[in-house]
Amino acid sequence: MLWNPWRGCHRCSEGCKYCYIHKGDQRKKIDTDIIVKTKDFAKPIKLNDKNEYLMRTNKIVYVCFSSDFLINEADQWRLECYQMMRERSDLNFLFLTKRIERFLTILPNDWGQGYDNITVGVSVENQQNADHRLKILNSLPIKHKNIICQPMIGPIDLSDHLDDVELVVVGGESDRNGRILNYDWVLNLKNQCLNKHVSFSFRQCASNFIKDDNYYHIPTRQLISQAKKAGIDHYF
Image (cartoon, rainbow, N blue to C red; front, side, top):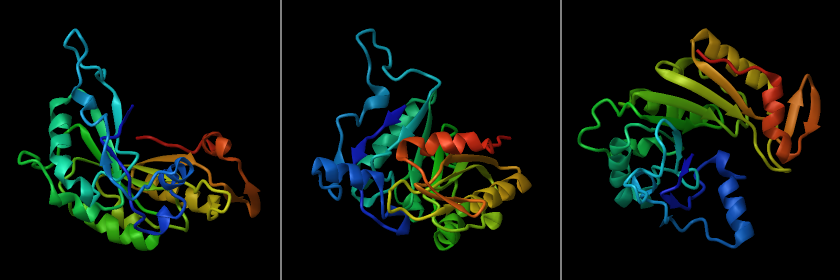
């Protein structure tokens, strides 16, 4: 289930080069750099005519997948989102960010060590950004932490960053000109996770993919299914 309280984003690192948000907006002639609140801002607490929540209980809610939850233009709205997430303790919220250094900028007074129903995923695309962002993540009061290596554009060693992490997700870049994903990098990350008893998911191949020294160009519609066929996901 998706909840996009605002939309729009700015490219901020190497992983943003072929961002699906920017590509989709370009086709629609929308300026992605303008961050605006959406009509779904209050979606988690909207009620039907029976005074029941429209968003059903016991669901995973993917938050702000048309932006970055920690983008600075949304500072004015973020606290209200946290309040809605707290009210809907029957839902599990997940948001991803490349701006984890801004996490402490806006937090509810009762955050403490984090809310039980919020998972924070930090996106990293290469070793440099993994070391920078995940060092920050490791220091933050968050109960549920994920690492998202998508798009993975080079080999990454997460061995020093997996303490208290619940899940690592790996995926390649989706674009005909996208950077190569080597399957050896994926398998290496899986082994790192297994050694630390961290769950692992290979979510998506890359448009340009190498396996066993063979090059493949994979159509976008097959990126997820081809990753699933690998059968290497592991959950603890």
